[in-house]
Length: 97
Image (cartoon, rainbow, N blue to C red; front, top):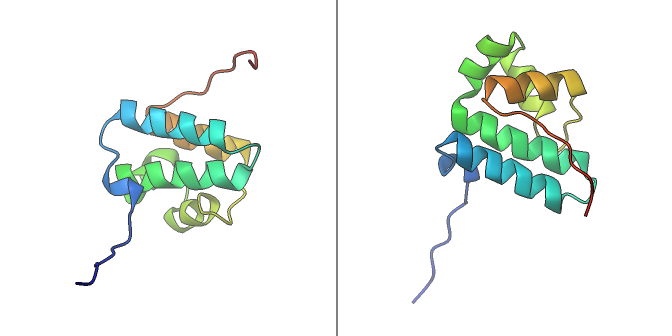
């Protein structure tokens, strides 16, 4: 008997803003300062919401969003903040444990 494997796409499982926020928070915690890891997580959330709608809401190009929010992306902070706002998310800061 063989096992059939399929690709897992987290964006297919992020349905609510709460799930998206929890996913992003977990990725930030686990990133250990890897900005590309966080950018990709934000890209996963953006794909779950719909990249075309997000591009319209942020005023940024769809293709540039895909590139910036990929594992190889390095988005500017202004892009990250626009995307987060459009996704219904906000960043906060707290003292490190």
